[in-house]
Amino acid sequence: MTDFTRRDFMKVSAAGAAAVGVSALGFDVAVAEARTVKQELRIEGAKVSHSICPYCAVGCSLLAYTRKNGNGVELLQIEGDPDSPINEGTLCPKGASAMELAVSRRRLQHPLYRAPGAGDWKRVSWDFALDRLARHIKAARDRTFVAKDDEGNVVNRAEGLAFAGGAAFSNEEGYLAAKLMRGLGLVYLEQQARV
Image 1 (cartoon, rainbow, N blue to C red):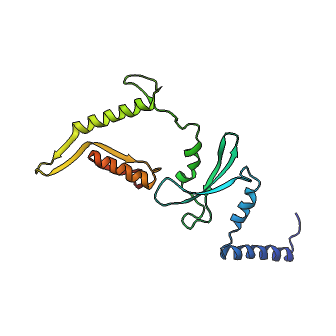
Image 2: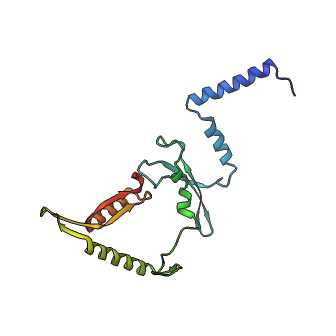
Image 3: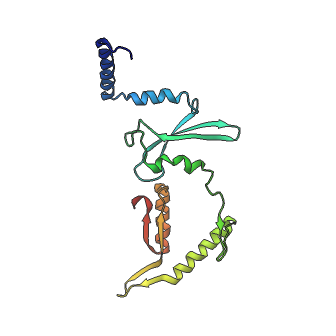
């Protein structure tokens, strides 16, 4: 074991105090070290784009790292923006998985359909899937539509349908979905981000 002198102790103490002092002034040593490490990672030379997390209404800032390749643009990494006053570089579990939203190999690219009684899913066209969905929505709406309540008030509502919006909806998508569902007469609307 090496000797730890009083002079060594004073040097280490002074360096630690300086680091704490600099950090208290708003200079985060961890961020500076992270930026140094990033230069050696796969994102070196990548284009940085600022974005917003799509999952809820908080509006956490994201940094998306992209690089051009032979097939177009490749998304390399998504992380929290340390300069954001909202999230200060941190992300919730859903925001931290934003990369999977974009590039997951398990993400379905085509609609699948399993016929009643069948054991396997089969690939179908978008026309087939959307037509079948529209027919089921229309049938359920017609079957459960209430024009007037017990007191004779006009209510025009479909009580047999409900809609749950996803947390990946943007504000515009949520507004459009709510208007469409209200137009169909739905009264049971929910949003995943609120639950």
